[in-house]
Length: 267
Image (cartoon, rainbow, N blue to C red; front, side, top):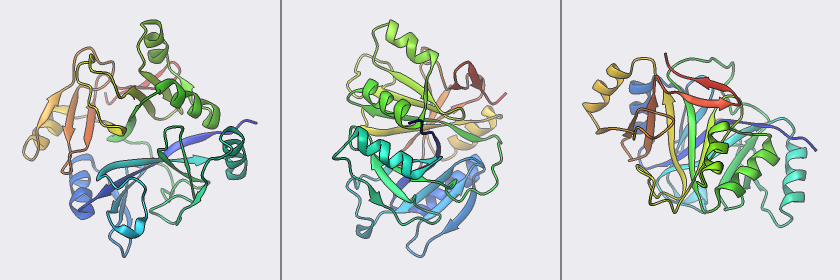
């Protein structure tokens, strides 16, 4: 049974959603979609709903770590996706979410228990607009990257990318997939030999395409440190940390592989 999904949603747990939303709006031209009475704020780059959930007990989150929290996918047929998920994972949890602008409709979990929000809508984005800056990269750290890759390929028809197959041939565990719009990296958590690797399990960092790197870096440097990425990395030229220490890669020339044979950059 074929089921498909597209990355559309990114959730943070935040101590100060107002401050975070202001930072991303000023530096990466995100636009506000709306706010909740509980302090949650949702922004968009035209393709993603990027939501800063106000950290609080009534969210009932299993993982209460501040920062990047979980992803969400727009799916073609929710019933088919849930059926396939339970066929694949008979004891898998299927949790109803609050819906609306700040949440998905249903939550499932990947093989390493990381939350995935699902929606048959596009998470309140409305009419899609492809523009730059835009988020084009999401990276996870996993214990078994190949198992996570297989899950997304099977469940959502993600494609394994050439950069991933190259690493298989090299005996490396890094895996890369895509849904046609976003590069999805799955790095091994225990990877101490890789230059620039950060041991943050689960959601690790994101990446934005930009068209004016020098100007962006100059503005970021007024508030936060900016560091170049290792030359050995196939994607991204620089990394910053936002106001709650989440990693954000910036790329203009290198870009990201977002499907088989399809690269996008900010030039």
